[in-house]
Image 1 (tube, rainbow, N blue to C red):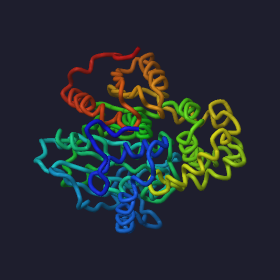
Image 2 (image 1 turned 90 degrees about the vertical axis):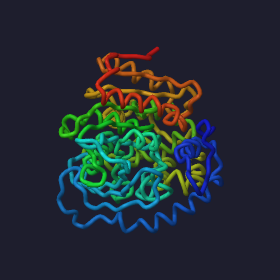
Image 3 (image 1 turned 180 degrees about the vertical axis):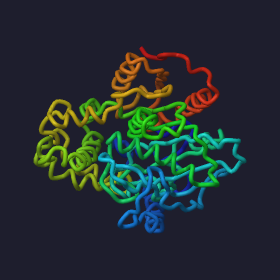
Image 4 (image 1 turned 120 degrees about the vertical axis):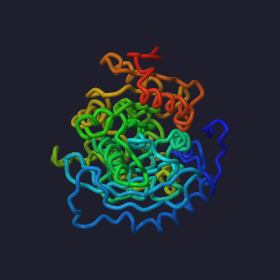
Length: 416
C-alpha cells in the first residue's frame, strides 16, 4: 500500500498515521517500519496516563459537559490544542466518560464563534490504550487537520467510548460512536480559547465514517442546539454485514471481526441473555477474540497478524449477516435507518481493498432512493489509507459551500 501522493512517511517527526494504519491492517507494511514511532508513543502514553483516570463514582454531568481539559504542548503552526475528558452516553443512556482532543486556530474568531468540525477517526484498535489522543502525536491522526484549521474551524476529535478513558468498547456501535462525536463538539464549546460556535460539520473515515453517519442521523434529536450544516465521509463502514463478508477471508477481516464481536457481545448481553461469542465464532475464534480485542494496530500489530493469520478460513461458525441475533445487531449498527438532516459527501477510493467500492456504491444508492442530498466522489487511484487525504480538498469545498448556503441543491450526484 502506497502512502499519500507527495507525503513520504517520516517516523519520529510528522507521522502519516492513517496510511500506516491502513497498511498495518491489511498486512502491506512490515511492523519494523513503525518501531521508532512506537517508542515515542509509549513515552507519551505513560506521561498522559493520569489525565484518563475517571473519577469514581463519576459525578453526574450533562452530555458533552467537560470533566477536565489540558493543553497539548506539541502542535503545528497557527493552532492550539487540548486533550479533553467529557460526559457522554452509552447504548443504554448511562452517563460515561469519553476522551478526545480539540484543536483551534490561533487567529481571531468571527462573531458568533467558529464552526465546529466533529472528526471520527478510522480504526486504531478498540482498547483504552489504542485511543488516538493518548500518544503518537495525537493531532497527526486527524486527517486534513491543517486545511481545516486554515479554514478557521475548531476540530473536535473523539476517541470513542472505551478508548482513552476506560470503559466497555464501542467498536462499530453506531449510536455510542455518534453520540460521542456530538458530545465532543459540545465539549469544545466549553473551552473559552477555542471560541467554538454552534454551526456543526461532521467528517469521518472508515470506522469514523460509520460514526459520522450516525452522528448525522442523531444530531437533530440528540444535540438540537448544534446547527448541522453538512456531513462528509471517506470509505465509510456503512453496511456492517457486507463489510464483514467482504473482508473475512483475510487478516483485516478477522481483526475487524475480533474488535466488533467482542464489543457487540458485551454491549448486548443484557438484551440477549446468554449471548456468546461461541454462537457465531468457531471454538478457536471464540477463544482468540477477547485477547485480540485488547491489541492495537500499533504496538501489537505483529501479535494481531499472527493470531489473525491462523484463523483465516476458520474464524466464523455462521454467517453473521444471516445468523440471529447477530444479523439484527449488524443491521441496527449499519447506517441509513433514519435520515441525515444535512447534505452528505461520500468519497470512495476505487483501489480500496478494505471498504469495497461496491459496498459504498450500494449505500449511496440507498441514500439516493431515500431522497437524501448526496454528492458521491470516486477516486480511481485512492486506497483505503489514502482516500481521506485525496478527498481533502473536496471536503473543504463541501463544508465551505454548506456554510455559505450555496451549491448544495443536487438531490443525488455522482452515482453510477
